[in-house]
Image 1 (tube, helix red, strand yellow):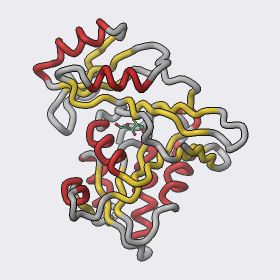
Image 2 (cartoon, protein in one colour):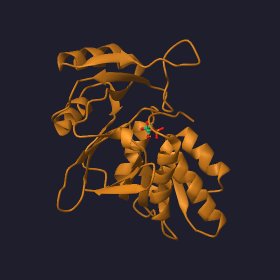
Image 3 (tube, protein in one colour):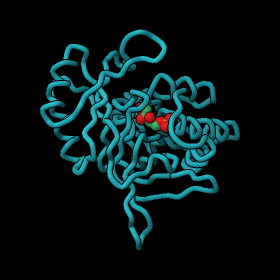
Image 4 (cartoon, helix red, strand yellow):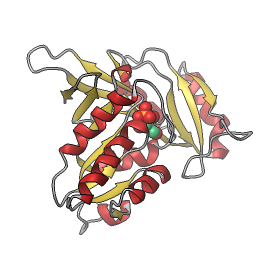
Length: 243
Ligand SMILES: O=C(CO)[C@H](O)[C@H](O)COP(=O)(O)O
């Protein structure tokens, strides 16, 4: 399991806080990464105590962990068809989340960057299909303005064309390389990832549209208008920002 960012205790508080909101009978999208893994483990504990849920995994890694934790699983196709149960809630991590001031009603949940684990294509399918999407994060992920490189999953044959298109919009693409093998990271879908630096992203919606309409792009890691709640674990508790 890839880990990143803040303390494991903060990630655990965030993941467990979101897992506690899941109710009996729900279908639950299971995110990817070290923070979402805490939510999956907590859900596994609750299943062991009688909670009746079914999970929809967002990656090979989350499927393996959920199976190890005893969570019954559905494929996304089984969960999302016209006569299917749908997804009640998804719990997933983020590499960066824009959290607004919200002085009267508390902090507000804004857009995200995801894909540090190269799972953002399936994550977006599952998170967007859910009635409630809960983001779990530690404080190192919060920012007023998104500025991390955006992971862009590309068809291998489109790698150079997409890189040129990104440069034409002022971005700087870098092919993600594997740490434990010579060569690139290959996603669960058999594609490559370009991490594209744009500096401060003043208009995430516009960037999302530009990337989504670039031929060769399978999916990008800008998630706009999807998060309903952001559970931020701290060293002492959990803060929740709402949409
Ligand atoms: O988007 C993701 C995977 O594609 C992860 O949710 C994101 O990278 C956060 O991971 P972590 O909780 O380990 O910091």
